[in-house]
Length: 351
Image (cartoon, rainbow, N blue to C red; front, side):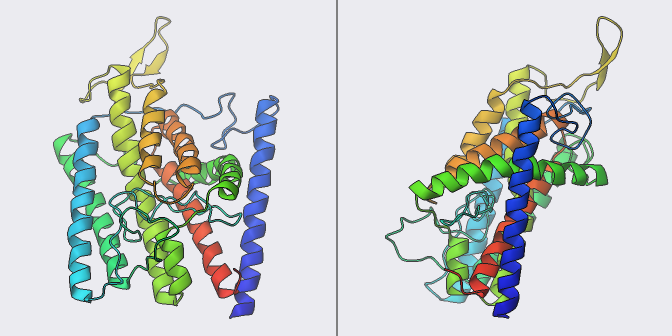
């Protein structure tokens, strides 16, 4: 098993290194004006192709509501798990900012890719300083965190569909093959600068996270599987729903001055050419939502710094395309890869 983990570690490390190198090549070509493909794999002079979008029907208030639901469900279910467990070792996750943000590499040179915004099940309440005891997440707590995330996603999407008479396609959440491809290509572009920033920050500020702490203390396959489902599947969906669609989208509506109500999607410009009614361009909603996202990871060492830049990249991706699926794909690939690297390191006995 140790030999297998060593090969897996080498293979994954090579994959990450190659992706970062390829991403840097893409950026250099783009800056020199020689790039044939853009950030989402299209042939376009734009860094990110602007795609047709429906006018958003949600506001900042919807983000506050959804975040409150996430926080409440996480707290209640975690409390139930701790009481059932009778073990003081169970550590409650940080509401909506806990196990997720994978883009902060662990203190080595690999990006710790767990998105940190869902009421996840993998985090400690607030992130202790390195001088404090290691927080180990118990299986029941992780399961309750996963359940809280799934319930929040289902409840929020269901209520929005009812209240705003919208659907998954209009919300940009309906998975499509082309959006999955866009997300995979965007991962290479976004991974490169974020990991470089992460590596620099990791040399200056120690990084720690309940997920990696738990893996170091309890590395059996059941814990690993639960953490993977939580951090690499549920968390990316929840965090992108909360921070990209609801928070950034709601702020974008306020910034652009368009009503968050149903309306005509297409209009004509002065030359009579067809234009999409919703064509957001203001950047401050991206920066504000990214800052909030990063601040929710305070207590995890230098993680908020690379996570801010990750969120900015995802923010522009969402603003230009209006699709949440590519953002989720980027988040999942980053978190999943970094977790697999951590699993391999522990299995191979690498410090």
